[in-house]
Figure 1 (cartoon, one colour):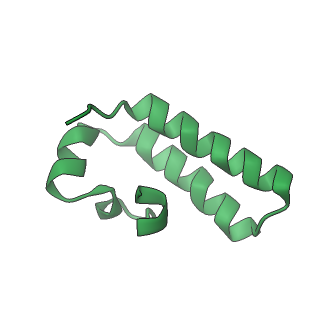
Figure 2: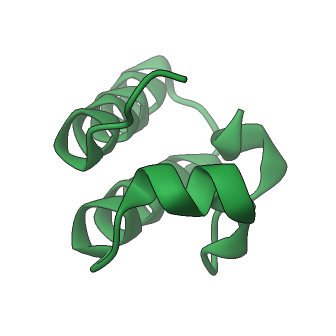
Length: 68
């Protein structure tokens, strides 16, 4: 299994939020990606363990669309 680096995941989600904003997408979708970026970055434990045991959707505010 590949290791998940919190900083890289957070940056990817933040970049997606920025691209959606440039595209003029739904503001709620933009906010969801921005909030997911922040939650991943601030998550105190190992993201690999969470992903393996419960999945990223176990974090409040991260739905299945973002977790995939």
